[in-house]
Length: 381
Image (cartoon, rainbow, N blue to C red):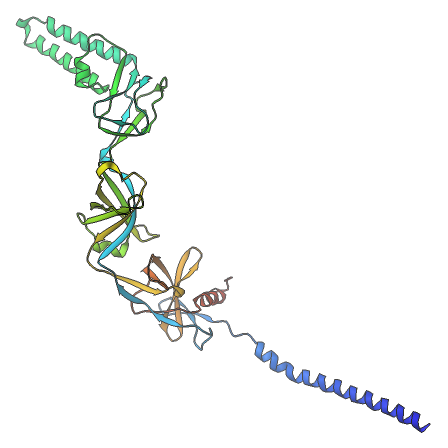
């Protein structure tokens, strides 16, 4: 009996020990709960502060963004060579279109697209009753002038000469050359239209048998003896270029050859989205090797300039625009829209508008700061 009592007592003690351990654990958990809650308590959301001038800024006083750094906006010197890219185009002063001046049809053609033609070469034959009528009037006026008596060379002779002149002018307006008019023996409903300039057929809309109306474009001719290269420069580079400035152009087709030229025109318009404007370069094209739509790299020798740069991590892209957070003192940061351009130095971005040298901007953790800006405004980041 005593052994059974001892065994029963031992079990009771074991149960008591287990119960004590459970109570101790529960007590420890309860005591540690407030500590964990204190660790997980979120930091207060930064506030938007309105300045006396109405500017809304983000208050980040007290180190609310771990790892955030601030960097200075720098001005760096640009080299004496201004490089840009552009595209080869026809000089529009060396382009000509051939249009129909009558209602009729195309009887025959002698050239097609990309053919080379010389000035005055017959290229398309047009049929129209208008030609026959005008030629008949011209021949009649000539006959009348010949039959006018010499004694009536006063008023009557003057009228006959005026009729010949008017009939001839009508033929010229229909597109006939002096040689074509001189060759008229009898009225004909067809004439050959001639090339107004020498060059290359760059567009052909003439199809044999097709009907035409006054104003219809039949051919477009162009010459490539000299070409344009239209290139873009940044707004802050405008002071470094001027009309007449010499340049060299290099293409991927001829990487070892420099085509010389000069700046002939500078666009009066600036693109507000990219802060760029165009320059038109006249470039010599020996052998007509430069072709329209070719890409070219343009190098302009100019005086040195300056550019504004910031670390790339300071620039935040948000809703189709770029922004930087500018420190204005007292832990306050202004969210400012900026325009950026291409820059070769790794790790830096070129700022075209929005920042000035000497200002300080958020560099590291700028994306986190931008998210806090949206949160403080009650928006989604």
